[in-house]
Length: 352
Image (cartoon, rainbow, N blue to C red):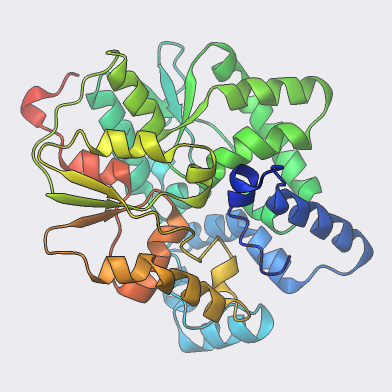
């Protein structure tokens, strides 16, 4: 179980559908009930809290975390490999920029996940802008963390409390028929697949309603465009788009909509790299004990493909972990699909 990447491929590829990732989190939960929780489980499970404070103290927090003494201490105390690049927290968060609003007339609300909110707000802003440009009125949701870091570390009691909070804040949105749009696949899987099983009774029923109305950005926009409920005008973009679907994205059957959406870019050829897991897998690849395994997985196919990209080609990856892995080992900046589409919006044909 220590080497389980929690990629959830087993859930869709195993003949009997064994979800080893869930088995791992359940095992860890019971283990922490009987043993003292490790510092690593406390730190990595508390990623949301770290992001909040990292953002509040930015840019000082970034300079401190990147310093040699801090990296040495993190490796010795927490087991965070010093060769890894750290997230760069942003003081100007997604919600501070987008001014979240609840509006019953909106067709969609964007789920503000931890890394989009505090490290990559431009991804959330791009997603909102693209959806609005396509004629889909979208605001930022008043959600809480999905609980993915806690679930991965087996801290299920705390993840359950977050799931309850999200039910309280998102149920009315889903019950009205509005879609809850995610830009991070692992957060979508936490809300769709994990949260309902963490809860019981009426809370579970409501969590399932939320799950039914939760969609990935690429899936939602492609469905809206295909059904004629949205119109997106794009300029010609890169000739070659290399697509690396996140493991949870693939396990939920959402790689095909992403490829279909990107294929709408004029003159672009989209190739699914089919590279399997990137090897980062959330906190897995950040630890000293897993660094070499993580790199070996990346070097199997993804990183060589990134290094061999022709000039003018673009690597697209919806997963935060995937983009960090490619940056660390190939020195290539992978783009989120929403960011790429936003860069290609044709302002002269904006439907707003």
